[in-house]
Every structure is written in structure tokens, then in C-alpha cells.
Length: 134
Length: 134
Image (cartoon, rainbow over all chains, first blue to last red; front, side):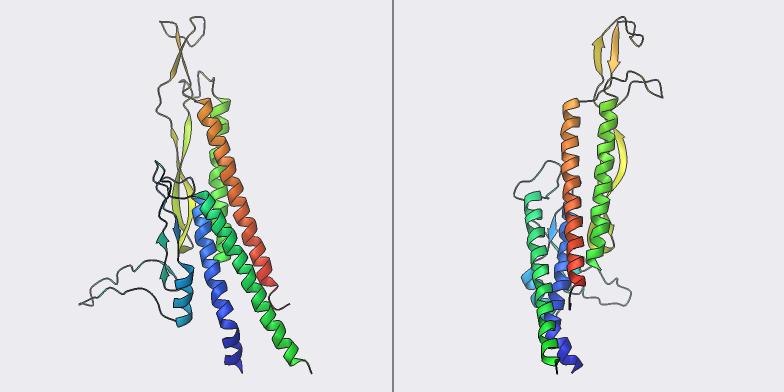
């Protein structure tokens, strides 16, 4: 029974986790809109969700031939999907690639999707409680 | 948790922008200060922003690493009657560019507003999350 519950809720839970991580990344971009040399970052949500649902970490480990070798930095990631750099459409002289319009639009979109997932999760729980009524 | 970390990121952005606004206020107030605590004319100051990791590896906040003095040449004004005039009758006026400062002020205030909006969105999402299952 417990694993059925987990199965029913896991997908939306994964979505919420990823949406939260993405919101954090977008807020970093907005906070650093005036930092010289800062490169805006984001991750591809669709592939991140696929990786997270499939349970596969999408990063390649560094091959080591000796125990003395360092493990290597495989890049930061949100559930196995690395955060990539945005391609600047209007590069600025100070090397900053944050486009505030894009970031704000993506943040609003992400927040809306987060709320939608919260609603779906709530509806799922409501369904369950309805079934449990005597 | 990523959504809580947004408070730190947006907060660091707000703190940095308000310090920038503070420096702008200082520059505008001292646009005509021909002398300062070190006996020399006031020099325009500028904040230097730097991205700094905050919590997770992906999350970057902002930090003011230093407040640098502008190296622009001083404005020389011919005013032989001025107490700070040199032997040729010129007074060194501060190298504050009022237009630059006004632009800086508007930019700082807009960036501050963006960070406030990000913080509010994150708060809304957290409150929404607390309603799961109600």
C-alpha cells in the first residue's frame, strides 16, 4: 500500500523538486543581472524530468586508472541534468549574458507550472481521501 | 531546500543593489565637494559586483567585493576667488558624472524591484506548497 502511495505521488513530487531547482537557478540569474562576466544558466526541463523519472544520472564519470586520481568535477546538476549556459542574443560589453526579459518570463512560467503541479498533487490527494470515505 | 535558498539569493541581490544606490547617493551629494577628509577633492565611487556561490553549487548570489574610486580625471573649473583654487586659479571639482549617476540609480532601483518580485514569487510558491493536501 505504501509503495502504491509513493507511486501515485512520486511524479508530481519530482516535478516540484525540479521546478524548485530551476526557480533557484533563474533567481540567481536575476540577482546577478548587473554582475560583470556572469553567464546566465538554465537547464532543459524536459530532459531533466526524463532523467529524474528514469532514475538515470545524465553525467559521465571521469575514467580513472589509479586510486590516486581525483574524481573530477562532472558539473553541477539538478537531478543529474547539468545546468547549461544560455546563448546570449544581445551580448553586453561587460560579458554578462543575463537578459532580464527572458529571465523574468521564464521565472513566471516556471512559477505557474510549479503551482499547477501543487494543484495536481492536491487533487490526487483529494481523490484518495474521497475513496477512503466510508 | 531550493525555494528557501531563493530568499538568500534574492536577498543578496537586494543588499548589493541597495549598496549601489547608497554609493550613487553619496556621489550625487558630493558632486560639488572640493575637499574631503583626506584634503583632496571627492572622487566618484563605484561598487564592484561579483557572483558568489550560495548554498547549492548552481545557486549564485551577489556580493559587493569592493567600492572602487573612479580614475576619471577631475573637472577643472576656473575660479580664482575660490579658497581651493591652485596658483593658476583652477579648482579641481569632483569627477562625478551626474548623468552616469542618474542612470546608475534607475538601473539599481529596477534591479532591486526585480529581486523583490523574485522573492515574492518564491514566497507565494512556498505558501502554495503548504496547502498540499488541504
